[in-house]
Length: 495
Ligand code: ARG
Image 1: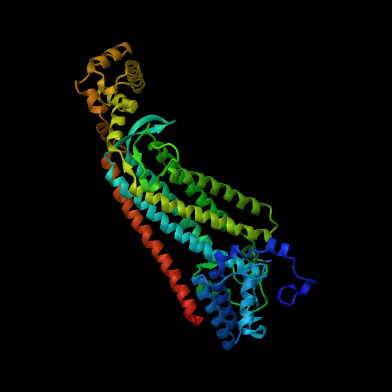
Image 2 (image 1 turned 60 degrees about the horizontal axis):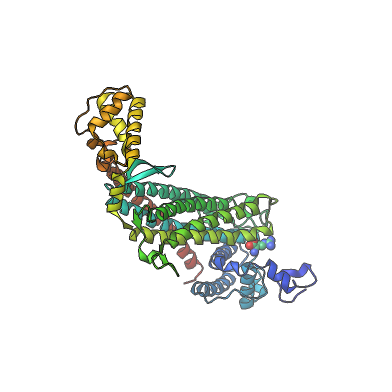
């Protein structure tokens, strides 16, 4: 038996270096170091309450853990040594400092299986709150930009063909709604993340009289993962969070794609600020939207990582399996990619240059005004829609063949076309103008949720309130957790 190893009484020798390196998660565990110490503090207080540790023993252990916490928070604590993971490292550190007589008691009634599940949940909770905070900040930028351009027309596309006239403000509002939906999904996960698995021990509970509810309270959880088997074995919460982040990244990627397309010379609606653009080593004229392109690629990466997570989990026998170790770095990577993308997107949006002239001129020349004209015929002259569709369709064909805009068509020409189509009409002289000016076209559409500037303003106002509501409750959740952790540290005599 290796002298230094706490765990290896059962076997005749230590792991060979290659095997140790292969099984060890020590490097990845940096990410849960602080959380593991906090979880251990709560466990130690529970052991005192259960009568496993005396007051004095508890105080001694907490003092050591407090020192380690401080070092971990400042980044001084190096996770190194011949350990398989942070849990073995931590127990060794405590025993090194207070001796096995006292330190040897901290793992009573606990296994690394509930310990790691606890640390993961604490860390996921933290990352989730950070992501939510970033997401609210980025969403707010979309509202802000919407405010300035509810009257700025751009074509909206279906099949990447100009479809109807919308506004850039309406576009930003739509993306805000997508992001808010993503936000609500993440918040919904939170209640399944914020549960304590501690006390499940290896897989089926412990004979020691530990009150599991105590750790719930001390660590600011909202409840227990009650079933001991689920507590150590289930990772549905990780799949759920990863999936929600995957959806969020897919939304960010679509925004990136829009802006990449719109910043091309051919579209020219927007220009990403120089701070967010790269240049070419060889073509002097180029300004490339590399930040957005990478966001699009990183969404693909997140999708792949998410798939990896599912693949690890789907075949696992119920209980703890070491495969679970590999799920952590995958989820951290997904969080990192998402948080970085959110922060960069916020910058891109807040500094985005909007080319108003270009948006206007493209809209003015666009046949995307055609449906408004057809609906004008329906509304003012009672033309059956199918006939109106035929008349305007022929009008557009004529314009396209002659290289003219719809606004250049005369009322007489439209009357001739409609007569040939079997619909004799006497149109007002300003009929085409009334519907075929982009801003008029926007105002013409009055249905709820349409890009009518008045409607966009109403939506904007409502969403300001929605955003505020969510900010308030996110801050409340964060404050509650902060308070629980300070209270835990106070009880453990750590400052
Ligand atoms: N490093 C391990 C993990 O991340 C901790 C749990 C180890 N448990 C065990 N029974 N070997 O999953």
